[in-house]
Image (cartoon, rainbow, N blue to C red; front, side):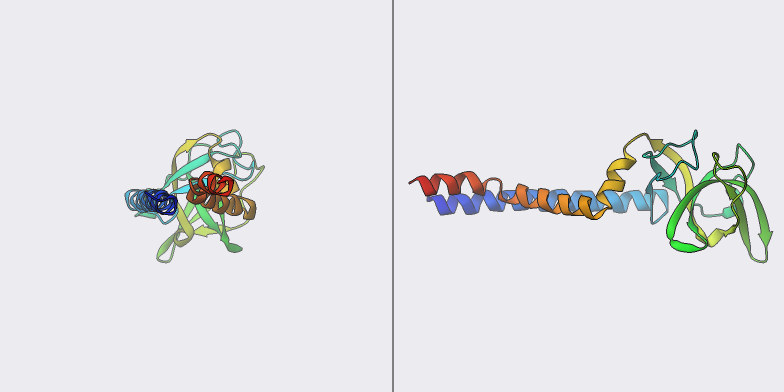
Length: 178
């Protein structure tokens, strides 16, 4: 087999492997979203507002809530929920539901971080609730935080390119020696 054919064969095998890995990860993500009934089943803690219950860098498993009346709202023992910040819907907050009010046709939640001196200044409508926290993995959230940053995205792309061309580089060196 010629060296160029070997290069193509190795490149093809690596590309196929990467496609399989990407499809598997995508399938896992879709299955996780379906099983937990939320668009955002994983969330990373980025502030100290929930210390000591949650630490910065914890990866949270979030389960969607079908009926907001099922959310337990009580100081100290209420469910920890993830919700869109009322003043900035692109930002997610992780706080405890300490009270709930039925107003009109929906529930509103009063929330508070366990490490904060008082309740938040807003009422969270049930439509802004992503879900309740059902599990956590310490420190793994740092990976999610990093991969969501510009440096993390760049590193991820570079790693994929290295994996694609890793088999190519030694063969090119051998070819240049001959």
